Amino acid sequence: MDLNELKYYAPLVLNGVFITIALMVCSLVMGLLLSSVLTALSFLKFKPLNFIIWLYTFIIRGTPLLVQIFLIYYGSAQFECIRNSFLWHFLKSGFGCTVIALSLNSSGYCVVLFRGLVKSIPQGEFDACLSLGMSKIQMIYSVILSRLIRIAIPSYSNEVAIILKSTSLASTITIMDLMGVTKFLISATYATLPCLFLAGCIYLLINFLIIKLYSLSLKKIYTLRI
Image 1: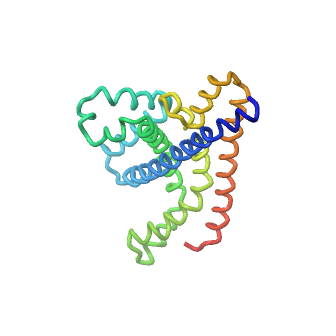
Image 2: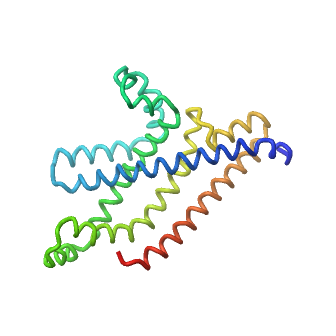
Image 3: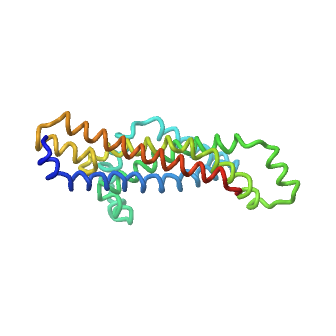
């Protein structure tokens, strides 16, 4: 692939990068919200609910992400009740199916991560809050959230990097993300190695920017008094 061809396909590559970033951001936001809710519910000491959450995380972490994407993309259309529901608005597109699959996958791992982080908070801090007469809401805000934010961000950065790389699987269901565009360029130019090298460099650049953003965020968070 020469420079003229690269200039010709540059808008297509940029569009693929935009779709990749959109997939990552949407999946992380939805996954974070879902995992936060499931983590909170898992501390309610209701055994049937705890078993459901455990089973959910077991299935999500025990099956390949590619299988999950295929089940959502190809399997959801097999049920008429889904096609006639509001869910079909999201499931009828490859983008929506990918976001749902990545969100579920991310939440399955993050629930385990967040539960471990909450349990790592010393019991003495909760006892101190109770002795000061704090309500549960005040205790959650003053103790749990402040500690979780400080200790979760470094661990959660790994999940962001994993989701970024996992977006490449969207190309298997006709999404023209960065990897989908790369496959198209390979078929159009027969320049397999240069195209894959270019895609790898772009993924590496995005990951580098995420790491730098996290490092800046950590510096600000550690200087704040929450």
